[in-house]
Image (cartoon, rainbow, N blue to C red; front, top):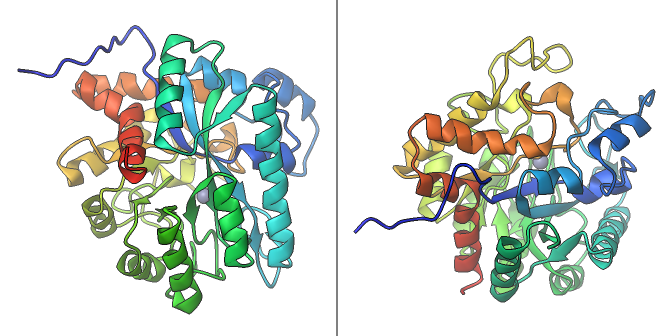
Amino acid sequence: MVHHIQYNMEEKPLIMDVHLDLSMNAMEWNRDLRWSIDEIRASEQGMTDKPDRGRGTVSFGALREGNVGIVVGTQIARYSKKSNEMPGASWNSPEQAWAQTQGQQAWYEVMEFDGRITQITNGKELENHLQAWEKDPIETPIGLIRSLEGADSIISFDHLQKACKDGLRAIGPAHYGPGIYAQGTDATGGIGRKGRELLREMERLNIILDATHLCDDSFWDALDYFNGSVWASHNNCRALVPHNRQFSDQQIKAIIDRGAVIGVALDAWMLTEEWIRGESTPESENVTFEDVVDHIDHICQLAGDALHVGIGSDLDGAFGTEQCPKDLNTIADLQKIPEILQERGYDDEDIENICSQNWIQFLKNAWDV
Ligand SMILES: [Zn+2]
């Protein structure tokens, strides 16, 4: 008997987006995500401190409009010995980076107090949220799972334990460049003793390893040492767009063997080979959601099924509409992905899995529900 999913293309499928720097936008871009996209953009007219001013795509309202009912929100603060040109803020000490992540956490907490989000830390809370959202997607707060992008801010394992107690559920040990625990994008080298100790403690605390941003050496080291759950929150395919930030087919297969789900990201340079930073525009390179679905499809072809890919858009991750698919105005346009998948012959169950269920099943497995 064919398993029948109650899914109607006329209704927007639930979307889970596993990589959004929500608190970074609130704390470093000074964006109040309770405002509409138009209000946020208008408030930034004439500002030149960030390249994406006036071109943001994420607000609580836009998430709701796209039926993005559950997200992973990051805390992000890097330590680097010398200031660099890498994306995202770098701090001069791990202590400053820790304090920055604590401010970001405070923002998530106060948004929960304000009824905009609800923190999810275990299987029961996940189930309750999904039921509540299905019943009332208008009033139910958006589900939020917290992840740390780059672990430099973990000063000691007491700090890690505190973060875990406060609800942190995933960690990407590195971001851009060299890190304390692992080497990130554009860097080289393995994870070393500190990295191994971090992974051991993460495993003990049942924290998910986010393999995104690990350089190749650290990626393979981390997979060797870590026995817990692995996902890649925002990662595209090197076979389609060559760059060390992207996964090779061998890497994709290796984490799929570990039960991973890989979130495709919407940063334009990761979608199309021709992108030249600072020169190209979404129009000049004709970057669209079709390119996003190319990366989704590539992962499905390698996996042999549609069970290991999802969405980790990274929208407003220090870029706006100037570096997005040209057919994206706000995050609500993620709903174009199911339409294109359907055109390419993916069935309703595949589409539902890619939009949200693969992540949800992953979390149920990780949290042992
Ligand atoms: Zn990132």
